[in-house]
Length: 139
Image (cartoon, rainbow, N blue to C red; front, side):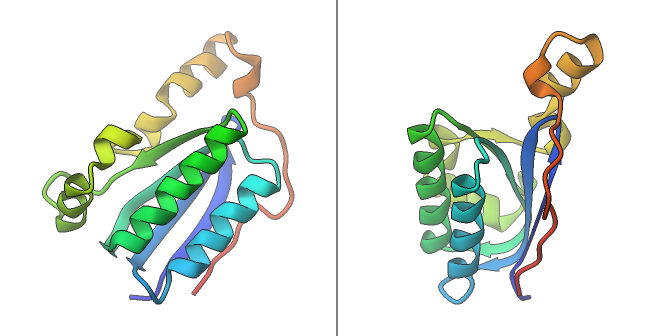
């Protein structure tokens, strides 16, 4: 399956949906998209890889590089992993993904604290800001 990357905003965070195979042939497109989002000003990102069928070390390296890039700008990265019985998650766990990233089982879980803040009016930073070009697909 070809790599697909799309993104949008929820509660002021950029949510990046990744599906397909993240390997040597598709990793450049993922790297470029994530780097572009950060250089365009995205400081809060959720990367949803729950629909990734395969992720090798090159894909893992892109996630680590994105996390570092965001950290250097005082940003944050939350990661949504495939289900616990999915082979891709097991491989990523061998890489130590849960020690390095703030991991979640769903986008809703990753953004739950922000959703609550918006509903109670406690966090003005959680309110989404409009942004052009919030959808993209890379094949």
